[in-house]
Image (cartoon, rainbow, N blue to C red; front, side):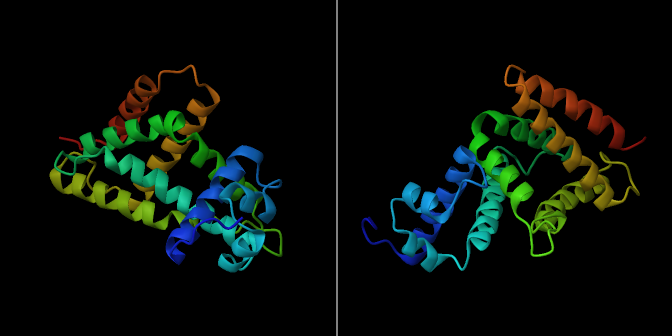
Length: 200
């Protein structure tokens, strides 16, 4: 059942990926440790060895899915272009996630909605987006220095508005697979960037 022996970091990654796959395919509630173990091709005992609890494993899977999504978008970006062009490309890359990374998006959505602490509050929230926001703030700050993003605009506000628009776009494209993702991304980029562009 456990298959070939893997180094601990590879085995953990395998189990986390199996968790993402299970949640995407069966939903949060139905993805028990037994289901995850079967998908990973290992024993439940081995899963339990690498996870202190199902909740901890789910939280790790959600954070891993977020990193995978962020990395996928980053692969298509050119750090040498100006901030406006960089953001436009990032929006386009995020839109394509609805076609290329539905599994990760579905798992992240399910876990964020389903995972609760002992008081019934969400375990995952805005704090888990901090690295994303900081990266976006860096792009906006560069744009302000170069004059392509409105000077004086609060960087966190810009990041929140940007992230909200991108998340809404991706949700819409997931719900409407017939939509042209690239064309929709261009429309979102036009609206967003026109509102935050530097003023002569």
